[in-house]
Image (cartoon, rainbow, N blue to C red):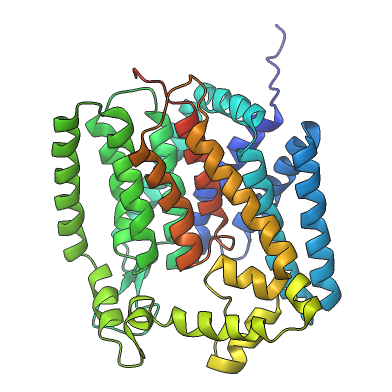
Length: 401
């Protein structure tokens, strides 16, 4: 009897590695000796590069060359090649992901792969939910990561940190949505939502409350056409969201931010101090010479800049400001023009010709742009992939599920 041959396309391998990447991230601290998530992330980047090379268009080629040029220039001016390399990889993978996500051929093929492999996605979701449930009942999964507030501990799970956990939970939520894409709203879908929702609400990472709200409302806005039913379900979700929030450790982080004695103004309080170094980083950029304005100072410069000013070796927590300082106008325009094109394509093109409502378009714009400008996105690759997959969800939706 002839053995069954297992052959996989690059698209199928991409989906497979994204699924494994999600599992590995949520289980990261249990395998500290092996940087499994980072290794799998490299495979994802490789798959995207191969897919892009195999269906290269003129726009893709221009984007690819501009991105490579930005990275080469960043190494020419960098002082810390290790830090520069790390952020350069994130930058390049993000641009590739978004560039592919805006391509109709890619979305056609990836949509078909997702539909065929929904059982694989389901198994991934079940494993991830199980890991999160085990982490929820494990005392070692909680810790006051920011060393402030009166909370007994923020939820980190078995992930590297709270923000990585939340970006991964957003990816997990989108995977769940894809499983039930062509079905009417079902209670089992919301049961699967619970572990990743818990992960976000108890993490203390406030920025991710916006994506969670968007994802919960997206399923309602796109599937429920009766306006009264939609309003009723939306009100129920809002009440549940508020109650869940009030009884989560996220409230400790929110209360601290609004009562932060170190905040100099309302904006500083709301952003938990981010606006302070946004202002400082922008002032520094304005003092660059013409070459600095055009090409920046390298990915590592922003860390040294904020370390010198605030004693914190952190990036700008805002992709626009971050890339202005690091890559100048050249790299920033390359990065943001792709995101703008990606957002527009998602809002205006669907496989079946189904027209997204204005409310849904606004929700998707919030999902993409709010975290990018309030916290920074390129450093959280799970969230970047969730944007691409959410775009596929909208693209492949049928009007009569």
